Image 1 (spheres, rainbow, N blue to C red):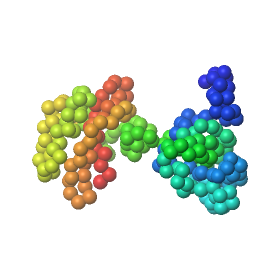
Image 2: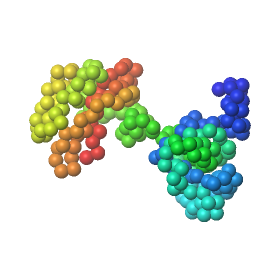
Image 3: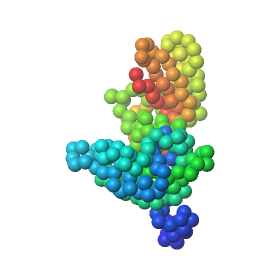
Image 4: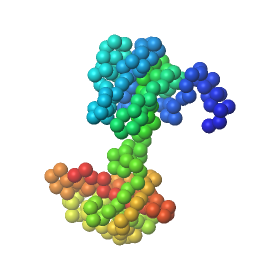
Length: 246
């Protein structure tokens, strides 16, 4: 961003600090709500800290909770039960923790009901927080977005000739029936759609499509997901991935 654009953005939001890259705070991401800007500034400036190693993997929670009591700020405000849109960035503070640096932001914003709020949010964490089903899937199964497949140590991964073929194979799994019946239908559909076991390699996941579950016993299930991806050479490929936790 050039200096003119930055200046215009700062003027538009009332000056002081540039807006964060993500100006929405989803209701499933923690934010502290304060009654006034001065309380929020005091909370961030005085009560966000880091303990010495080896207890420096998170912020100092003891100091943090003292701050909530002292300032009247809260993590449980009803105003944070819907998405908050950040309208103005007021103050930033960056803390150095063992995993890396985290920046916290005092902001003014408005929630989905139109209530105006002043709060503090972990700007670094909020920028990484998943917003869509695809982003949540990536965060759960492939945190860096790249699947490093090793057939010797990992479950089966199928490579299909087209994304439509991968999706068709997954959709062919019957909603009901025995494990054997459902697996047989899946195997037949994989063959019909040119799917085979994938070789070892790196696959960058680019899209998530249908999934179907096949129960395989007590606390056992296969959760087959149709995916679009690119391989290590940048070629578009289609995958069927087992996202089972059991």
